Image (cartoon, rainbow, N blue to C red; front, side, top):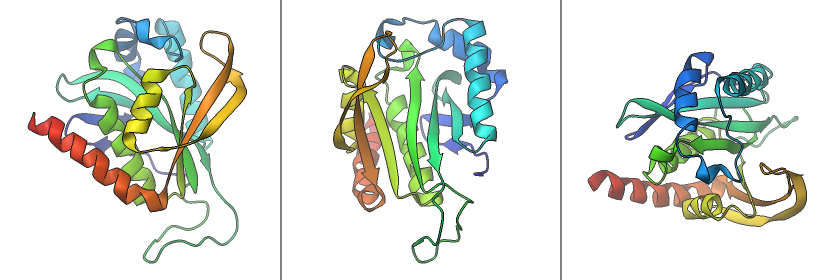
Length: 214
């Protein structure tokens, strides 16, 4: 099972999600909720507690690594994200030269998901650096083979953000799941492979450097 970690950048810090973050998450989620049409974001303290407890239960099983997103500019927790659907492939693995990992210690593939931000943190670069920190940890520490990112096919805002990272559209799975608006959801699936990570990293770093300079 992967060890708990804190991931720090120039704009954000990803902190292990705990119940201590509930009140801050409630405050963030209680800002303008107009952008949550296609994203499940807990409303109110009771829902948020259940949300965090469910994430921690999955973490205890080695299936997810959830984070609270702290925006360093304001020193506030402004949302959440996670590395999830962690898969541990069995049998001999072609680990790259110099890698110390062995089967079962770290995931072989993972998803990034359950990402949401309070309205005040949207469009600020917080999401971009949060994704960068997650991708860096997955590819450079865990040495995963693939990261998957998904979005409701109707969620143009989330899809644009994923595509801006340099992720590849693998396709759309029809009738994939129940949508946040209680409809039958079609889901756009994106991926980044280990071999693609250097180019993706350079692309994101350039955008972060530009934002930092500005």
